[in-house]
Image (cartoon, rainbow, N blue to C red; front, side):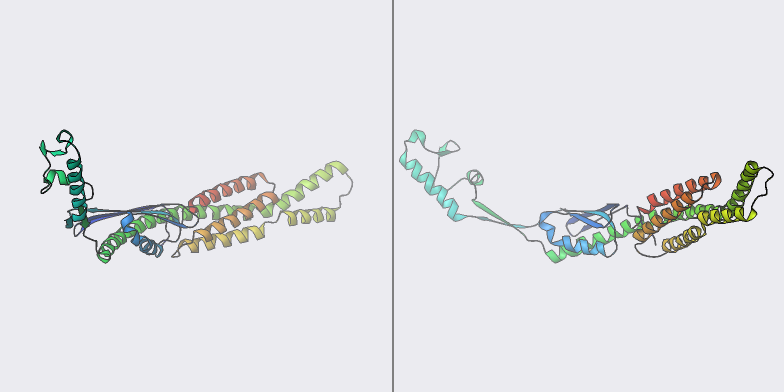
Length: 304
């Protein structure tokens, strides 16, 4: 199914004691560009997220945001660093012994008892307590995040496919318009030679008066004109490009670059027709064809 390069997908779940949110959005890009936003402590999952996305997306600038929030605290191991605490006590004791009572350190308006620190005092002493948080199980977290990411990617791809179907319908409609324009050119172009022959005959008759006109010469000039203005090859190639484009629009996978190439070729053929045929009616048709091709080109820029 045809896919657009723009899309958005979101999934959020609570797994164990974690609230996991994954959001994916993308815009047009010539190649596949991936940007993963995830907490530093979860960076080990970045490459796996990229690999997961790469299996389903070929082109586009894609941004994945992952948010992991703990819904409840995890147990932590808290210990007193006895060596540091002893250092504080020794330093305070030594200080109090070296100064007068007037300048002695006190705790809650009382002189510090070096045999027993009040808890309030200890809480404010740097590095006295050592907190060791429980480590996450990486495999467990990885499985949970990738599970949510898969759902977000599914929603993301579904949106790209829905947008791609709209683009497909629009391009097919414009291809139909181009086919009608080609039919008109194929019908009108052969008549130009006869019109040219008639104009040439009339012009020579006016110039020569009653003098006998060389019919063979007029036919030769008309043949030369016909050769210069023939657009059969261009219209045949145009129809071939239309057919190839319709086929690609119904194929699976990334076809955006192939479509873009065909659009360039179609535009080249139409320009050639416009330069060969100097006729008001066909020129108007050429302008319409170029307008439709430009609109197709704009739509194709958004196809994966």
